[in-house]
Image (cartoon, rainbow, N blue to C red):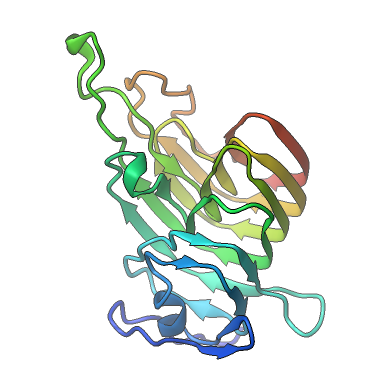
Length: 231
């Protein structure tokens, strides 16, 4: 295996822009996208090791492609995300990309290995105050935490290995939740630990602790899927 220099958690470098495409070769260049809405294309051009350093999810990216010159994918390794979920106004949860809110978004030809995600749930005060502080979602996933209603989103040839996800309610190995028209082609999730760490939270799904894999936390509207999970 080729050693990939890990990110130091500090250095951030704007990647080169060729036409309408950012060309990303290093961890520092990938880190530049943290918290940003990216309307241009992102092209991953080498294996990237994020070093287990805290990474803020990319808020939105309309097109990401990690295909090598041949048929293989480049790999993003050791991505660590700790997301403090305070409500939909600041995003939805923890994943490489926070959300999809632009029509015809495409994410394709990527491998992820060793992702570690922790997301708390946001607190909403319900009418019954006896349950205050025990309501909310903590979307957790590898690629994207949420697809907004009405959006058309395609995920193709994305493979996730050896991950750990901790969230509440909407937790999936690839995606947290989708309310749009979702197409998933040739994707996989292998050897994941997925945990709902707030099992007493209202609306919390019965995921609890398991070494079995999930693929998509929840979806509504339409999902066309071709994928597999393996443990």
